[in-house]
Length: 404
Image 1 (cartoon, one colour):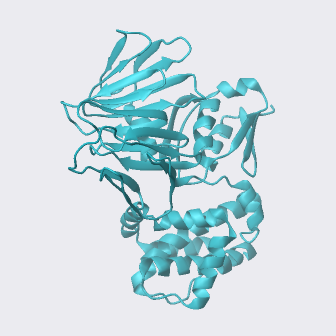
Image 2 (image 1 turned 90 degrees about the vertical axis):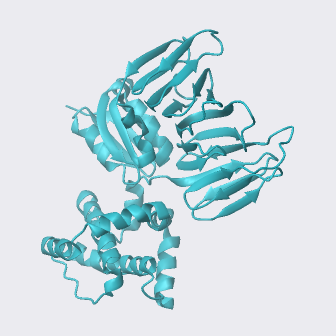
Image 3 (image 1 turned 60 degrees about the vertical axis):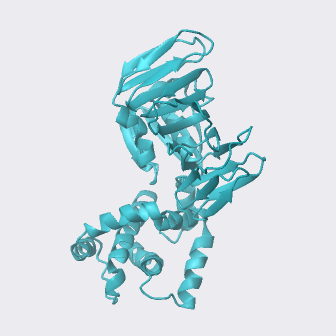
């Protein structure tokens, strides 16, 4: 019970302050503002958590969830389980926020108390054992070579030389066409998403693009007459604005994807020996520039895998929806090797990994993971096979064959 008392003393105050801050029920006192700022500056993990809670897109989903919770009943059950009694008076206006914040935070804290045999005040030990999820951030390279960092909730409103307006809100970068005279050369922009990042954007034709970690997209600030063409490295999901008169073309190293209006995912990281194109809906045509006349037409739920070394393409039927769940905050793994899973997760969680034995790299797994939460669940699935065990040290994971 001593650990629970420590949780009550350390977690409750900051959760209440954040709840008040979000609800705008009343202005925070100088003391509360100071306590919040101290908590934010204590670690990057705290700052990332706070940014996620404030994010407009997350807040909308958060509010939907909170409205469905019987907070009085939830608190009653939680109090019975933990023995913690909360007798403080709360403002009605922000009670739902408080309950929504307090219960998850306390459950996570209790998890660490039980699993690592430490108290929540031992923050250094907790941080050593936790690999933190990524966040929404990117770098925009303008046509003149200027780099602009896109992160957190900063807004942006830029006008290019031809009048094209670039606007950024908390969640998305968007390009807006203008009706000025077309210039001889249209500037190209590049959106670069680093390791541990993700970003969404809307091109000038209203096509939506979701860029995954360690990816970049080069594109014109507005599309000229004729085709719409972009260049991708890494992974992106495209929801293309239908325009039969202007095909949309995605160029990836060794492959050209042509569409009219459709939703599809392209996975083409340089460290992989393959380029994977998965069609969710619509129709797309793949062609190999080095092999004239070699084309593949995909229907919904078709997945084309190009072997970079042999230039051979294999098309199979899959559940395409699973391959774009990452844009909704979920990673889904279907019969994937441990090595491939770690490649995917390390880009987002920004960690290093090693295999003590080569053969464990190829062990196959199925499972899913909420990418905005701890990496622990997927590691538990891996260890539950009885074949592999994982050891975490700061942002490093070592996998070894489990001793029999």
